[in-house]
Length: 385
Figure 1 (tube, one colour):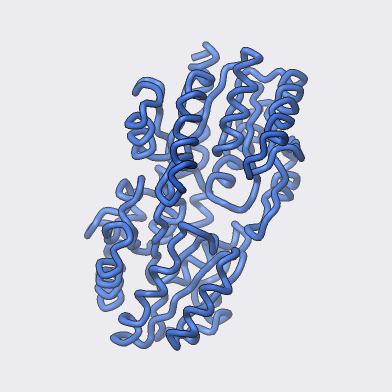
Figure 2 (cartoon, rainbow, N blue to C red):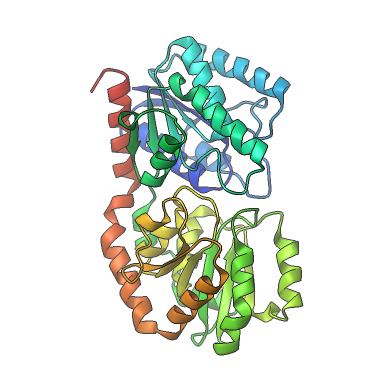
């Protein structure tokens, strides 16, 4: 099978890691001919481009493909995509992310190439200005006929798109994001080693969050929960893994609260080191206000850590209250603080929830399983199934 994947940027992020696993599996496990087309991976989030090259993957960088809206650049990117696809002649095109999803689908459609689009997170979502929300929803409606099938990372994405009048149920398949599960089961470094590096001792209870320091990721909710938590449990520490444009803003707010010693900024961490940091946590918190299904939720559970999450998008599909963690209403500061206090105070409950999550979700999120199911979709849309 000859496949072309198209994604806007290959930064360090969930959708990008998911796509890279898909491409890598196709090439190394299934022997497919596959190329990955992306715009420049610029930004403080870091890039996965070198990782793709190190794996011997066919990576094509299109300078015209940029994240921000720019009619001239977008038209140039569409032309460049059509030229590249015409030369490569794939059996199927697989698009990812909003910008690449629209332009890639259009390019494939104009060339008569079957196309699959992955919805890692809705293009229209909470937190967008109204005009952008309506524009992206309209764009998705227009682009819907340009592809043969949608792959969603959780059932919630399917419901959101169907509720917006985009496609019909038979056009959607849910396939959970894949990851290197064994890496999360067997960290390279021990939890005590990582904690020592971070200045943590055995007495500390660590609440961790893995996400870019960026809008809609919700770090501010953890920061505002900290005073009440630290007041009752001064041994609590908050660990932020990731970098981004809001770091200075968050540091200033933490200093205003006189809680600097209770927060640790680990900075940008290579993806293969993320499991080590999760094992160093006692609780994983997910306070984003928009996300398809955050990879950190199953990752934390596979590491045996309980999760506390806002009830957004697909979070409820893995965060089940009193089974694998505690799910709280989105943006509910009081409920978030209460849930974290409950887990901080009860070590046995933390162990119970984390163990149950590991048993329940380990096999379901293996990247090899994800790629097999995605290739079944390819076979269906190309008439090979």
